[in-house]
Length: 288
Length: 292
Image (cartoon, rainbow over all chains, first blue to last red; front, side, top):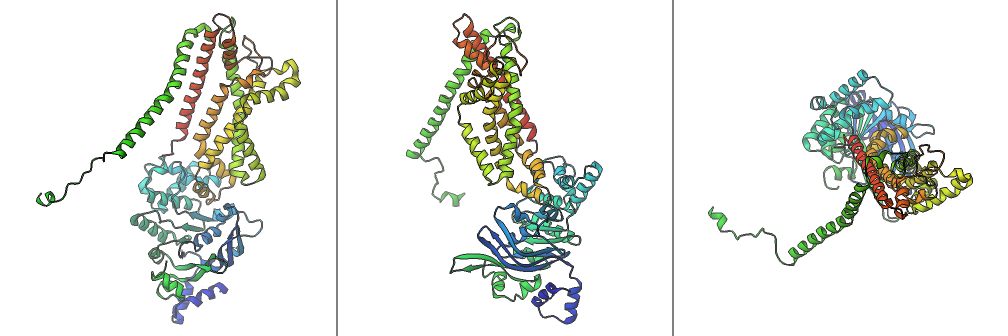
């Protein structure tokens, strides 16, 4: 396999050769391959020198204290940061072999393949049906029967169908926060993306709604690649295959701070056998 | 219970003294202000209805052949205002969409935004003078027409519509735009399918308010539409009349009954404005079906 695979092996805990081989067998193809990525907001360098590989059909969690740039990195993966005036990316991000930030790449085409679920549930002020049908419609699907089919399939995938099937024409703002967030996931699924980026999708939800979303993530991961930013370390251990720990690097001389990727590896290794002392301090709850 | 009776009694009643008095004074001042606001408002409407109702008759409203009656002015006002709205509303909304969604921090967006702000503060008579100078004078006697009045009213409406639409677009939360972008929507899609529908009720009511305000303006029409007493339904040629102009001329006129006709025209104008606002309410309610 290519270089990034080896890099990850370096951070794996000591295992027998057989176990390592078996581990490799489960590793999907690289979906994202980031090399030396730095992200700026105007003059402020929010993230410095991040390199990591995200694998197919895995759930990758980004954890770390506030201001460490994990959301910034996430939003760079589908060019969402293009919408922020002054945001700029240095370094290379490849998505399935294609450079994301090359001249001529259409952010729209990128986002059709790489969907996003946000921190706050953000359904459109339209009916539940129109929320789900929105994505297919902007992709040119007009046929009512086909749209009905997509709406039902997406809502079923998001485990919401039974709760809303009798009120598809009611406002999406009339359902609970947890349902709204699953609606937003269904909306993302409706365009059949390749990757789903989730930016703290459960931070506004209670534990029961959170549990439902986590179950849902497990269910859909065989078909999608998921990257999730979370503040909740238990959530990272429950849902993710790999974890990237970010931290804030302060430079007292110039009084600046920037986010860095401290350690990236299998979730079990990050939480049980962290190699970096900063990771250890964070996951054991001594810092952050 | 016994245990409870041992506890000291807590007084949960509103505390007396200065704090309570302050509250009472503030409440009284608020009610007083409310009543004071109602006095001029109520008096104006009462006067207009009381005096206008005397003048209004079926003949006053509909007979368009024997002057003096209000029909030519109603036709003029409706035509002039409607055509002004046809010009100003789309242009104003498009301008606001450019400033709010597309222009960003470009110099052109800043310039348009600044000019709109300045124009809101320009007295309406200046709009009339402007159209008089650039449109009416070059055309000589043919210059006075409903169209010239429409142009002046459109100049008056435009900045109001740009301002109110822009404010409504700013109220659309950014997370809605992001939700649409994340599904692979282009900027035009986001604007057409998310931003404008979310803001439509505010845009409609803001625009109708601008239209209603312009419908009642006298000054921009003074030098642009001329003055006739018969109906001229051709907007594009010949002098015409409008309700505000008729109120103006009748109120100044020394002839018997002129004052009554002015009041009648005023009542008609208020009724038209009321109908516009009523329509605005219905349209707004229709568009906000899914807001809750």
